[in-house]
Length: 68
Image (cartoon, rainbow, N blue to C red; front, side, top):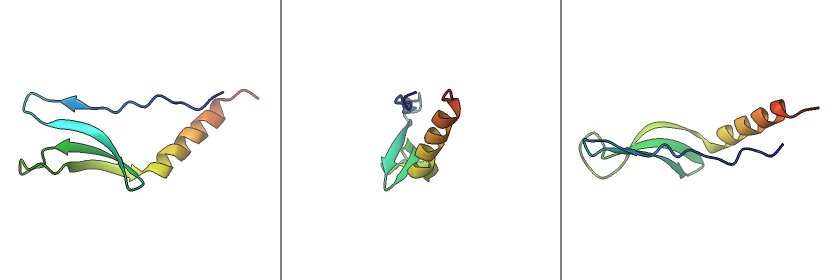
Protein backbone atom coordinates (compact mmCIF):
# COMPACT_ATOMS: atom_id res chain seq x y z
CA UNK A 1 0.00 0.00 0.00
CA UNK A 2 1.27 3.48 -0.82
CA UNK A 3 1.48 6.20 1.82
CA UNK A 4 -1.31 8.76 1.85
CA UNK A 5 -0.57 11.71 -0.40
CA UNK A 6 -3.68 13.87 0.08
CA UNK A 7 -3.32 16.77 2.48
CA UNK A 8 -6.24 19.04 3.34
CA UNK A 9 -4.86 22.52 3.97
CA UNK A 10 -7.97 23.56 5.87
CA UNK A 11 -7.93 27.09 4.46
CA UNK A 12 -11.04 29.15 5.06
CA UNK A 13 -12.14 32.78 4.86
CA UNK A 14 -14.82 33.99 7.26
CA UNK A 15 -17.41 36.77 6.96
CA UNK A 16 -15.47 38.92 9.45
CA UNK A 17 -12.44 38.84 7.13
CA UNK A 18 -10.38 36.36 9.15
CA UNK A 19 -8.50 33.75 7.15
CA UNK A 20 -7.21 30.44 8.55
CA UNK A 21 -4.77 28.04 7.00
CA UNK A 22 -2.02 25.53 7.62
CA UNK A 23 1.56 26.73 7.57
CA UNK A 24 4.60 24.49 7.14
CA UNK A 25 7.66 26.28 8.51
CA UNK A 26 10.69 25.66 10.69
CA UNK A 27 9.96 21.92 10.98
CA UNK A 28 6.43 22.52 12.28
CA UNK A 29 2.90 22.43 10.97
CA UNK A 30 0.75 25.24 12.33
CA UNK A 31 -2.88 26.27 12.20
CA UNK A 32 -2.77 30.04 11.83
CA UNK A 33 -5.28 32.87 11.58
CA UNK A 34 -4.90 36.28 9.96
CA UNK A 35 -5.16 38.90 11.22
CA UNK A 36 -3.95 38.43 14.78
CA UNK A 37 -5.95 39.44 17.91
CA UNK A 38 -4.96 43.09 17.41
CA UNK A 39 -6.09 43.17 13.74
CA UNK A 40 -2.46 43.30 12.59
CA UNK A 41 -1.05 41.39 9.58
CA UNK A 42 1.13 38.85 11.45
CA UNK A 43 -0.63 35.48 11.79
CA UNK A 44 -1.78 34.22 15.16
CA UNK A 45 -0.70 30.62 15.75
CA UNK A 46 -3.75 28.68 16.98
CA UNK A 47 -2.09 25.23 17.16
CA UNK A 48 1.31 23.77 16.34
CA UNK A 49 3.05 20.39 16.31
CA UNK A 50 6.39 19.13 14.98
CA UNK A 51 6.05 18.04 11.37
CA UNK A 52 8.15 14.93 12.08
CA UNK A 53 5.46 13.76 14.53
CA UNK A 54 2.74 14.12 11.89
CA UNK A 55 4.79 12.24 9.30
CA UNK A 56 5.62 9.51 11.82
CA UNK A 57 1.92 9.10 12.62
CA UNK A 58 1.20 8.71 8.88
CA UNK A 59 3.88 6.02 8.64
CA UNK A 60 2.42 4.12 11.61
CA UNK A 61 -1.13 4.37 10.21
CA UNK A 62 0.05 3.10 6.82
CA UNK A 63 2.00 0.20 8.40
CA UNK A 64 -0.99 -0.92 10.49
CA UNK A 65 -3.34 -0.97 7.49
CA UNK A 66 -1.10 -3.05 5.22
CA UNK A 67 -2.13 -6.65 4.64
CA UNK A 68 0.36 -9.33 5.75
